[in-house]
Image (cartoon, rainbow, N blue to C red):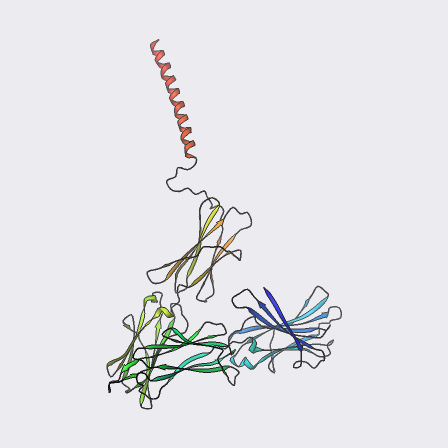
Length: 507
């Protein structure tokens, strides 16, 4: 359902004309999981031409180009000449736009329309786009402005830092873990701390600080107690209803060789935040601090085979050394069961080792096919086969001539030997329905990627009466009866013939 919520207020920022009114219209499409709204700014004088400016229906990221549409009118077609001009401004600089044109309505009036494309940048949080229409019949130009912040989304960057009271932290001491959420817009987000994948605290719209470029940043600290067991702490952020972002750090208690106590060795072992398809190279990174020597080596192994060209650096910091190592891993279709081992040695002695499953970074897109087969009476079975995809979560929808079909069966998943999945979904269609050519579409959405479709033109000629194997069929008794009658007639004819021949011989 499409709704327009109007807000009317006197305009004091864009025009000096008395009685000029500014209308804010938010066009919203309801009935979906997240209402999609397009912001329209309109300026009008009672009984006079108005001007409106419409932006995209959803926020988008820096680097994307988005359209803005400007409309002014109505102007009387008889008295209106074509010597008008539309000017676009981004901030104070003139901005190129498409050719302006006149659009007539059913009441003998004309409207002026023009479109401008704007490539957004992160600095556009403080920018605005202006549309100005001039004509000799207007006392002064029609002008309206929209803030680009209304259509801009700047995705935050995340990191976790650790702060301890010294380089050696004993068991039962506390470590400050700070989640830094940097340069995001708009300000609303939800932050969640998790320990070993269990939620420990959630903050909705935490207090953020405005940066000079108009974006926001925030920091939140969680105090963790040091224990002998390894624990993973993660900071999850959901921003503007987008997929969650995560930063994590692991605290591991290890025996300190020069004493009987235990010390904590904070490290980070992380990969990309989003899944990638086979053929993509992903980067895995190990970061740790507090090493007593620079003699540290990091080895990466995939399925027990050493990975080439790791990038390792050892940096002196205060009285200890910090180590960072990264490696590129080529993903393949068979990596659902693959793993990478990060092996760290200090002075040729094993210091740290951890295994990473590549399945958490892999996305294998499905192949989709549709076929039909005859069944009982007037029904035709149409099957959608979705093959070899990973991970399992997919959404399947049947469409007929672009309309969603409801009441379909739940899909059946099957796990393949390589860890991927296959899905079959059956749809029964009444083939006796008369009408134009019917097109059935199986649409599959996987991991937030663009949907894949497979189409089938429903064939009524392929529809035949189905007979199970071993059945004689309804016409078989009649056939036997006919054969019996023919055989009886043949016997009678042969009997009469034999009798006649015998009598002739006796004579």
